[in-house]
Image 1 (cartoon, rainbow, N blue to C red):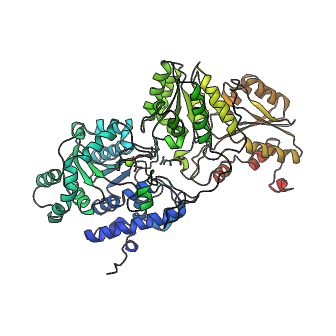
Image 2 (image 1 turned 60 degrees about the horizontal axis):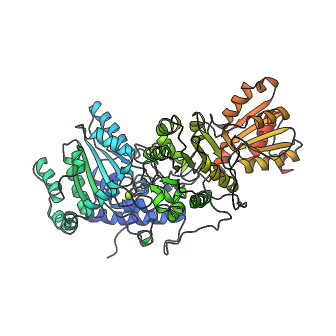
Image 3 (image 1 turned 120 degrees about the vertical axis):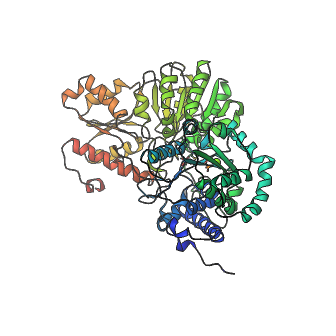
Length: 636
Ligand SMILES: Cc1ncc(C[n+]2csc(CCOP(=O)(O)OP(=O)(O)O)c2C)c(N)n1
Ligand SMILES: CC(=O)[C@@H](O)[C@H](O)COP(=O)(O)O
Ligand SMILES: [Mg+2]
């Protein structure tokens, strides 16, 4: 029999609340198909969302969202949630300029009470919502959904430690798909695996259907009976109970009947914090995702029938692979080199190093704070640790950087990938702040690579830099295509390089805006404003000689960087001010990311919006000179 489509009838969760269980199962199938189809044209995070389709439908069917608060950890699994919460008509704009965010976002919908994209915040935020509810004498539920990868981070334990000691009603759903971005690591992961591989759970999967079928809905009788039913169905006490959570599970997260019964029962309980352990499969219901090693965690556009992703042929290696390859090369000769990643072996290139040196690569799970201090300990014992963490995620480990690394002047090497604007992941993932937040720390040496050859030299520099912490940043994606020398020489600490000599305008670039600076210089030359371009290479120690020379020999001095205010431009301004050069009529302009968060788009468009492209440099020069600039001049 042909079923009438149901998804067209559901704009908001309230529209499905009268559905039968069979209808909800059908709705889940339709949501899954819709998500697959949408992501096939947008690209994005697919596997995580596919794994929570039934869970998403069940939560919205049972709870009174948006009055009940549903908080998704990371938010990369929220596409089914977006489809069901008034955003289906825009779902094919996901992660595009002007489109829907790829994560939960407060500004986007009242169904997103808390925004995310960095992991492991949902239990803390949920506790905030629950406490606010209690303090205001209100009612309602707070549900945080956190993955088995995300629950490995310290923040999640801090939150459970706090919540478990209260009577505040809060529901945590542990979405255990036995995957992080890469295969999960650590003792917690082993413990969860043991819990779900035990005989109890295996038997329940089979028995669950029968029990649920016969179960009254909601279960009649006292609340106490309902609680006993729910718990009795599954395994007994666990580690979570010791932490003060009322543990329910493990539950098969693709069994709609089981999910609905458990959620309804938990909803009716009058209890403090409850943890529902739901077992799901990342990529569920789409064979190419289920069968792939990464479960289609993040994909480019793909062919729905074959699952084949459209990959553009690269013109150059990625900065990430250059880093990983160079580090592995150095490690052949230096057994003190060790590599650390916080759950991002592929993203950081640490997988390349780890393949060559499995015993010297440490994936610590989503645990940036621990990664930094772990590296500090290794450095204290004479090792040469490379701690490879995206610029944005290193924010999580900032006190460790200050307290454990910088103050003790320990030579931890920070490889900061995804420096600058990263495109579709948007503002949460922009590597905007590391220049400012590391540049203010005593003892640090900081570099930014303008191309892959320089990145290779920076790795070589960091290898032999034993006198204190050192960091180097590089962009997401393809490098420039230039040749990398066979044996890249270490750089002289604190020395930049002149790329092009001119006379009236100086452009001092830090990082990969160098290409735009060179383009701007050519345009300026054509327009009669002879321009010098220099690559600072170091933000700290700053090449003061270079800065002074550029200031003394030019009328206009521009700095440019892929970072926030308070970074490289500010360091140059300090030097110019302190050396009296600002008193002499020098026209200085600092080009940084604007003091706003820039929404997702292509990196090119984001940089255009940020005003950090070649035309913007030319315009800034003209304005500094008090001259009219019009875009047509550039076309001449
Ligand atoms: C603080 C932080 N570190 C790293 C990441 C990168 N990251 C995004 S999702 C993810 C894996 C999450 O695993 P899990 O919570 O199990 O969710 P799943 O993808 O399996 O559904 C990681 C490491 C992040 N978003 N935030
Ligand atoms: C959700 C998350 O944090 C990661 O999946 C991130 O989107 C990966 O980014 P890259 O694609 O730049 O590795
Ligand atoms: Mg997982």
